[in-house]
Length: 490
Image 1: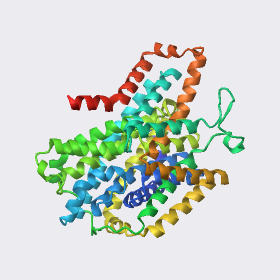
Image 2 (image 1 turned 180 degrees about the horizontal axis):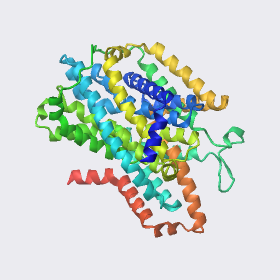
Image 3 (image 1 turned 120 degrees about the vertical axis):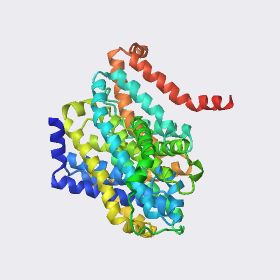
Image 4 (image 1 turned 180 degrees about the vertical axis):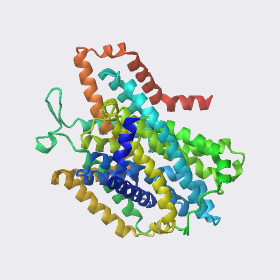
């Protein structure tokens, strides 16, 4: 109880609350603008938080993460153009409801179900993270190696057109993570006599390039596109009676989203699609789906926002990111000198409770901001791309340079911007690459330590039952598409 009070007192400082609300506002704006995304905004924000207090910096990014997930539903409902991938499922019934003359009702259903789903996952987070950390305290290098390999195998189910492409992206991320001097042996790898590469490639310019600059190139292809836009005069909250009718859908989707979020690498998009499918499966009015069904809105929205809280559990408790956005938050934690994992929760539990408080404030924050500014956010989609994207590029340049005052980082950012663009053109997602970049260091370090302990005997890893368990899960994860095809044929 004392740690909870300390954590909440940290986050309830005036400056921190302002930064959290600022993160909420940025998150909603970014989510509401088609093309922009929470990972992109977090990547751009990271270098500007260097001078902030670590608690304030991570709280602001966590708030942006929560609000950005909801913000994507605004354009999904009003213009049928999801501002974020998880909002794709919301558009299936949100846009038809808006076309039927009820945009305010659709936005209200999305906002309230998002808040309820977010609160549900945070309650699970506050209990599950310490328990998971206690288990992880018993982990040695072998167990962390098995866990990291399993997490990498889960990249196959992340966003993208192909599981194979996702795994390739993840392997490329692991390879990039090996650039520099190996800490165990002192051997230089892939430095090509370039001094700046001896310490490896910094997270920040890579993240900005992959998420911001590559999207800039992609959006330049659609500068003159025109879409139908629906104005929302006000956000209308659902009545208590309506919420009672939808309570089982919200509760079910919140549980699904939290569980999916906790799984490494799954993320909000998978949760939203599953939330929508299950809402339709259990609905008594299946014929209304696709025509403006309230269940078709609250199902995916409760699921994708609860996944945001769920994804923070493995991120903080194990140091294994639960989604693309939490991978960026994990990078920010490392940049601010924290060691994510069980020691973070056991040595500085007040920090974890501070993050919990920030996300709780963020959930209520975007509901209030949505109520007050629904009319304004319906106009956000009118911002010309010819003005928006040059501004994004300027922030990308400043952020990359300011991180370590190095023009080399700017060139890294531009290089990965081009790489990210061509990856997207050929069906490769950037998120698995980032996950591979972060998890690659854990795989390499834990494997090196294990080999030192066991005198280079790989099979000694199998002496640990938990490692064997993770290897079995990895095998099942990689072969799931094969088994699915076999069962479908039969």
